[in-house]
Image 1: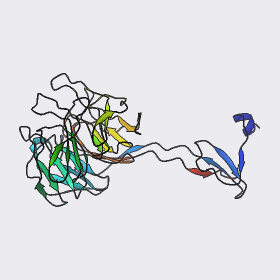
Image 2 (image 1 turned 90 degrees about the horizontal axis):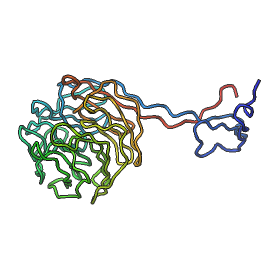
Image 3 (image 1 turned 120 degrees about the vertical axis):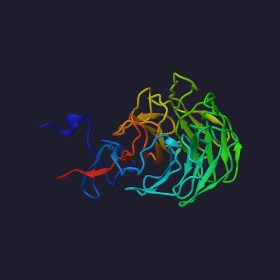
Image 4 (image 1 turned 90 degrees about the vertical axis):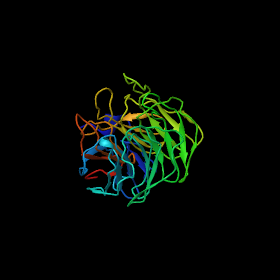
Length: 325
């Protein structure tokens, strides 16, 4: 019978304490515990079905977390709000202004919605307290299909379309009362997800053309609270995607490349890697959560849908005992 040395060309490490940061596949024998151990492989990320929204819709906004999500606005200029508890959706308070294609950020109990199409492009901002919406300060630049990031008191709005024919690169920052101008995007674009915070924001993909045909982008840009710089390019050019996470641990999923896609990608602050695809390809839907606990809901396939999907990110490698050792 072949030995470990003959198969792998090396001996099993013999140590008195477990390595502090072993790599995948590493094997060692701990003389203190007299146990043979190995570093198991990383588990893959996966999407699973969640509870359906009460109302099927697309072009809605989303924020919050996987177990405390918020979806509001959307197609047919609805003002309806729904709250997710990790299992099911329930009705929340209606927005003051029904709209679609709006930006969003914040949490389920401190949400922010801004801009959108009502019909007609609007600059209104509304704040949610977990029960009802109240009017906030207006955006300086009227726009829809705008990216959002941050919190209710430190929000970020980037890009979008100002009048259905003009894409903007303008960025604005919200302090809980009013919006002020921030640094402009390197490339104006619309219909892309935002992630992160006001001082560490991220936008990815989108459409750089205000007229047909769409010009889908793979580009990411990172914001430091003052200016945008280029980040790593995504593997799939698209717009209408869902997004979640932070500037250095982001998740982008779904959207359209000309046809709806289920493709999911993860960002580490430098580069994007392909992950497990969504179960249902869709575009123009709500996104929330983190890279390891994402949430996608509603959207458009060939019709408006109500279904929800939850993403569980790849697990860290774990140390295991060799059975029988």
